[in-house]
Length: 220
Image 1 (spheres, rainbow, N blue to C red):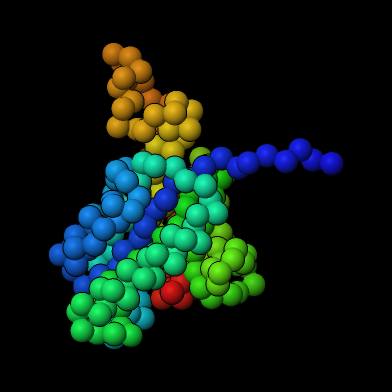
Image 2: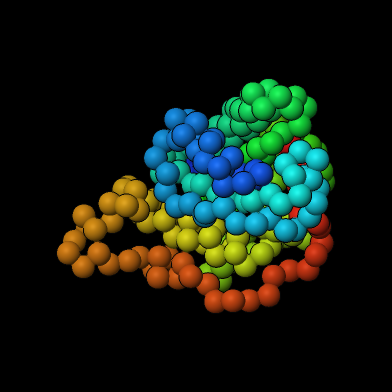
């Protein structure tokens, strides 16, 4: 019989879709109150993969990503997804658009081997956690890079996303090996030497897997 072990803690990453950069910034402090200090962010940029969100967010949405220093138990993704759903509804109420989300929050977590997204909808590739929440393995890490599955959303197959997530993974690797957040790395010595994972955090440009799925997410 295998020995029971508690899995390593994971890094939380939240993807944001919103009308504009100001809308992204408006929710940033709320996320920090929940998750703690930010680690590595990807500033808002045009989201052009689909018009799936035009009724809720508008015709020219932006995407941004925020990762956080505090590592958490992976089971907490259930509470996190339920909480982000509540925040979306609160924002909609304040904006006077109940039922339509002007800000879309997509929480996920990263291990050294995979990146997962949380969702309320079942599909063949999704694993049920509890309280109506599933997780979907979205990317796997192999030979120094993240790779897509057949079902991975098209935007998460893009070079921009993959480069960002590989840099987040390098920080996670550093944090797990040293017990310190990446921003404190220079405390290890005057040279500020990087780990092997950090040196490999900037992947060369390469083709991503085919358009198995469109960019419109159903991770509500």
